[in-house]
Length: 415
Ligand SMILES: [Zn+2]
Image (cartoon, rainbow, N blue to C red):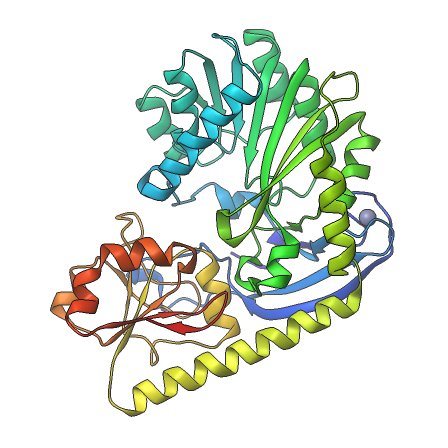
């Protein structure tokens, strides 16, 4: 890995305006998912800056740094089916879409960034045709083996045409947590539009910047996430591509996300009140002003001081801390808060794909929960804090034996 994989943005991703200003900055990190094998941890791991730009023209917030997506996504280790709460989320999601748009059987559902096919399976079970597209080759292979047809590639014009030729127009195109990841959103969106049926709906979920700000969820800022979306700039963006954002829902995923519903401008679905409502929320939150980001920066400093003090006090008493969960966002949290191997002994993660690896930058070993018996600790710092409730529930025996959980965000709690 070398510096040639890094490029920088000088214009807005959504409106092309060159007036993009640096409003916020976090500590440099390696790519958040660059977990390594033991044999590699002696090698130097390059850290890249994390600067946020705010577009003066449309208000879109975006990362200045762009790392080569091939480096980031082709060896991806995240598998959605491994997390039970995600599986339930997807089942509910599929059922909602089917009833909301009264989908007829045999409708074509295309998902971009379909991972192991967990979501598409719920559509397939209801007799729809499904096609997934995902650049992570090993995960696409798992999906295909499980009977969910998945094209191992980045979705683009070529793939869009290929699906159109083979299967016809799509009734629903879904892209969850993809819209934040792609640099050339314009080409991506045109390829989506061209595959969409004239009455079809494009639905995507992304982390919501207003929630990031209000709840200080700064750990969702890492190199995979190039955009931090709000609705106002998206409305203009879709308009420029002959599409209409006609409905938006706020959902809990990743601590606060939006699910946007978009159609072609010839589509017949009515504009929902939800769009006006959320525009009001954005105006009130002052999310398009640089001073808002300065405030966010201050809130993060307070959180950092509180957590560092807590960890220091625990260590001073000779007590031990382990981390729980090794999501990508833990890389941002640990680097920005400077939580290193001397602070936590190891990190427990339930995904067998991450066990045995070492965290990006700080080389903390990721292990299975068996380690808690072998090498007991007094505190578990929940790095996958958005799953705190289910983690605490699942590890009741840890609390019963006197262990305590530390939840770092959205506010520091000891449970
Ligand atoms: Zn812009």
